[in-house]
Image (cartoon, rainbow, N blue to C red; front, side, top):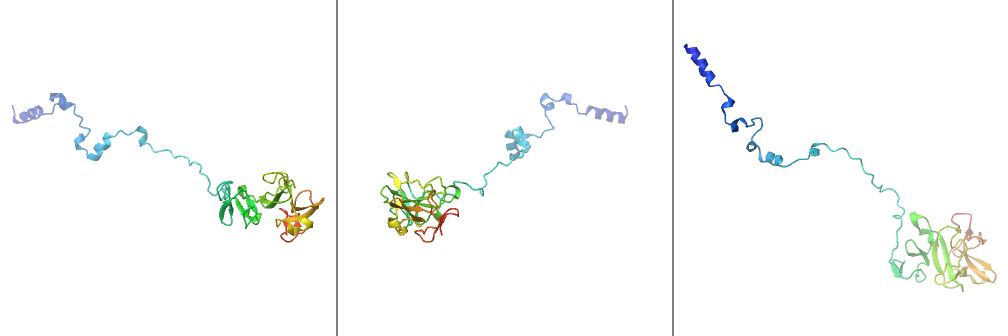
Length: 232
């Protein structure tokens, strides 16, 4: 045989035949790297099962409506009681009482804050609604006045001129201004009206009682053409 033919036969006999390898060798998947070839970080990732959805980008969530901090809040506008129950706020301190008869610096009780005021001009209720009407109710003997700030409402005390239930502890009445003398009244918004043998201290603007133009305890005259009615 020629020398070149021997070389061809030798090359053919050395050709790789996978059928001659053991089963363990033929089953090896050479397309995937051995785990030992991976870095510790990659091995840790491979050991952690990742949910299918984790690879998906999260859908944009709609912004939840948040309260507008600039929107007015009816309750938040109130100062709230300045003292605990059974106390009133008088001249910077909390004193015992449910009204302002014991306060030397203000006899008008502002219910929203529990403060004793000399004028109802600064008293406000819900949503900063003014409570400007200065009212004083006395007992049936027209003594022991109790002052409160009330709403500008002719259907409610005291602009409705009904004092029957306004005094704490019993029936109420207008306070007395003896000898039709307005200086004997308690409130600065009071005018004095004779009422059948008894003189009444009447708040400027009370319904059914002519108070316009009458002199006021605090000076000026009652003006019922403005809102709220007041002494000017």
